[in-house]
Length: 308
Image (cartoon, rainbow, N blue to C red; front, side, top):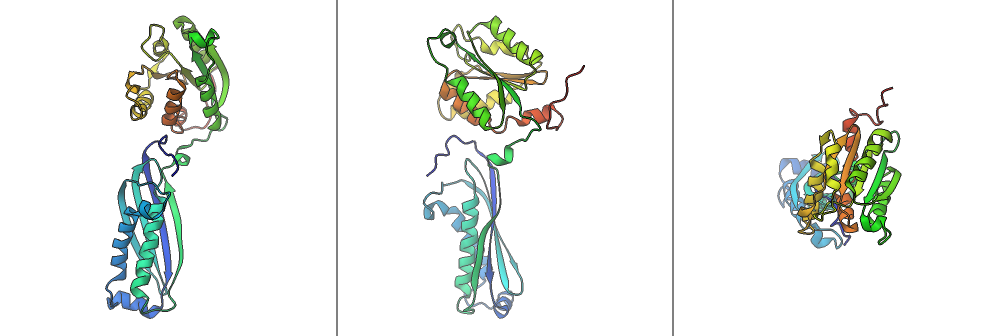
């Protein structure tokens, strides 16, 4: 099975359909309720529901998923029956295989119940019509890439005693999401220098996003969260998402003092100093976080021009 443990839980849905060709006389018998084995459409509905719940038992690489909703519908024409399965659930991976399994088993159930009446009956197709809730649904496109500054704050790294991994990981992940990293700096854990650097990014360079790494713990030199006093507005949801996601993976996530906020049209986000902490934080924030900029820009896909 594919590892999906780094993904966020989101509401996911899928719709699949199966189509059978059935002779007109048999269609009439279904409508009249004279099929020997009973109502094939009602039995198919129950079979599809049961099949969706057991998908991971019969398809080896499917994850067991918590299904919140299942609906099996049917439509009858002169020579065919269409069965549609809709599945919803909140989880880290999608519901498409559950929907397709439900549609397929519903079709097989109809076939089984009508086979003695129609030798030429055929299941024409089982296909996915729609799926929603994965990463692709939450990607925001911008007229020009967002401009980002990555700031590493560490006495040991700036002093050459250690090499940076966290800042480089931030650069890599942002680039993968089509975000430009226009500045990457390493500075000591010095409050005054941190403040000066952040003000420059926001007020002079006018970058869209500043992501810092380091200084979010409890040591005397962990001064990064002090930078939130620079912000016009605090943003509580981003650090909440980071800590909530991390707490499911380590009991130490609650000890992070990371904050986020807006200074003008620049979003400042504090991330932990460890590479693992950065990895998990970015897993929690991407791809949803870039939508903040469209919100700031009134729904536009381009940063407003600076006043002259």
